[in-house]
Length: 433
View 1 (cartoon, one colour):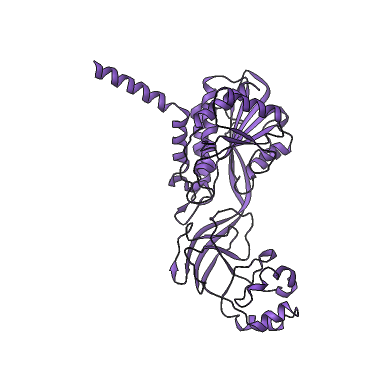
View 2 (cartoon, helix red, strand yellow):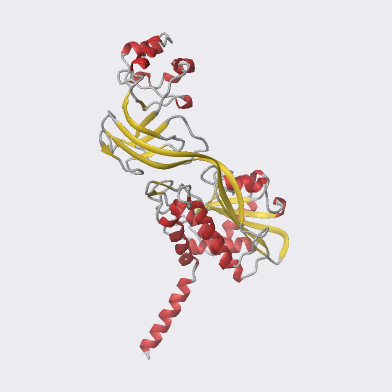
């Protein structure tokens, strides 16, 4: 009998745990960071598959469609890097740990060696603004691909001479754009000890940028072998995913948002984006599940944006092509990087809406939800911004503390330390608006 009772309570505990927001969030994050979704980006239909998964979750949760669809299609320009193989000094490098490719880089293939100038060439440029020696040097090297490492000019013009390091910080002031006019610079290498942070580019540049770990290659670069394939897409097609839940009142809307896109993958290397922003999508979906069980005071709209990493493309498109009157929005909550919480949360726009921030802070304090609720002013650093610029009262919330990656291959998992309490906090906050 004791064994039966024990098994019964274990079963009940399992059911309760499996229904907790944190447990559901773990499932969502696991799916969104899986190899199947390819980093929710631009290769292997990663973003498309992610949007379909979120729409499926909207349907299972019980959210209604707006305009007979969960999808709001739009497009934007982006440079897509599909393949990158790099060897430096005959050592094959690993993307993400040894090096990173600049987001705007075009396709290129070949073997490259550093271009070195002798002192007379440097003197002709810097002292006399005379490029005659420089032109002769370029003609001599014209049949050999070259790499200009290390020093960045305005408009991606780079030059270096091993004998003239003292000129590095003076170059932008001493040399005019006309001196380098007409020079093709195919490849630029920047050796760095800084953490790699991958990005996206809305344009394709003329120069390939390689950011090289000085730990992987501490010695000077003498040879570069590269096979890079990229594709500029002037109108990449994506979807915002929008769901609706009718409340007790329809005179105002509460809008909850999170972007679902990330940086995708290059070769077989995935940028998984567990914290940024699978965690935000998990919170968005968890909030929807909470309100389906208990009808909200106001109508709720849940939006998962595409294109945030490319420059807030999805949210900007939405405010320019809204599916409802933006003036009806009573408040907007945007969740981006909410996978930790050991040190509480940060609230962007808290200083812009002090009464709402004080309400949020008081709820957290009264119910002992979070260690701290920190306030910030306005910042256009996530999808709340286009709405805020249209006059919509809004917060952007991210968690503090814990460990997570950012725009790198290490953003693979999150602690979800405060997740259940975040759901409780924002549910109460919305109910008191």
